[in-house]
Length: 317
Ligand code: CP
Image (cartoon, rainbow, N blue to C red; front, top):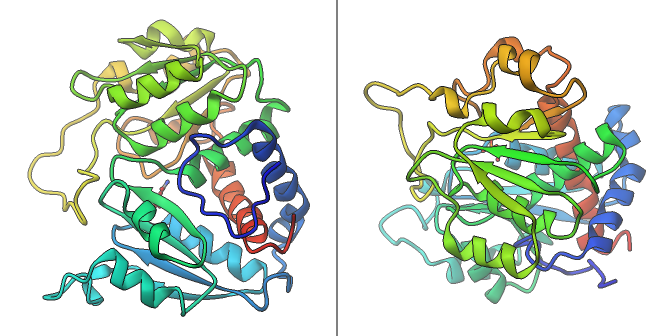
């Protein structure tokens, strides 16, 4: 297995099955610290730099929380407008990262341009974690989701997935790449205009992912062991910030997971994942149903980032 020490985490394409397993093992080892709300000193001599060019609640704060749990330090920015990349200078990724690499030992970057973390990785002498890039990928979110499935179902292989939402969404691309390493058929359900981009379809076909499409979640939810939902009503992820304005549309029934749909059509032991934030595609009354696992994803999101930080800093092999 390739070592994680010093590695960038930019994409789940070419992430090997045994590498997923190792990340999940390390997550298991470190989970007790998070569960017991304790900090340790594993990364006491390391600093994480957060470079967020797009809003985030979970990804930035879960990385920061993970670093604190491991006794490390955190610096960085959550609003690029307050940096030289967001003012008159429009400082380039290259020039910015050539500074940040001296301010810490790992950078987690979210950016509105697909490929921006890859560009940073070209110039940085320290590892870059992709915290979501435009309509590109969101590897740490899908590592969190697979870890959640493993914890909740005891296995990843052999489970049938249904993924509902906007297939341009970065989580969907990381998910497809990840499932190429497992025996997991997946059905994608997306509105017209939000179909899976061809470049990802080609990658999935090349790696023999068993995938299909459906128009209505109600037609396929009955077969699913794992239901993963993303909004179809959402901002433009290629913008640094997309404010809400005017009338906000509602989610059509085809792409909505209601309690009635779960009660009437889903397997009683299926699990429902949502990386959040949400609009109306999963109503609040689903939250305490036996299907929902999104709050567990929140906890696992910290544990997963602890595992990645421990591995890429070389503190665990
Ligand atoms: N799931 C996720 O990426 O959430 P944030 O946008 O809040 O980071």
